[in-house]
Length: 104
Image (cartoon, rainbow, N blue to C red; front, top):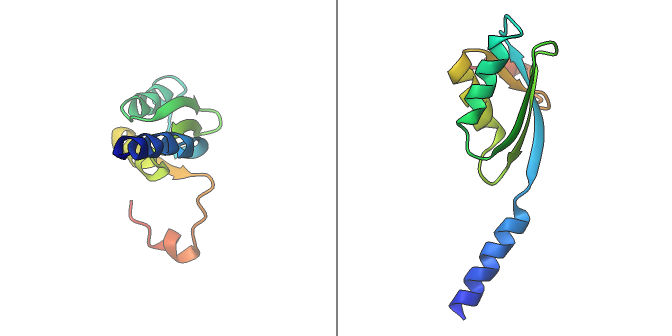
């Protein structure tokens, strides 16, 4: 009986996991050659990232990831730490006060 419940829980967790695609603005890229490569390299180290498309022209990156393995905050922090660029989730709505007192 315990094995059946265990298998059910494992199966259910796979059904709940989903791929999410999010866009992050990248502030600080100076060129179209090595800067996008640095962003891509930063995401290569993150478990759960399915795809990463960096656009120097749009100053952003579109990332598809498994939300069971990684979240947007972890992704943004990893890119920022690896590249020293400012990274912000496009859909991340912050209040005036949050923007004013934001820690970089």
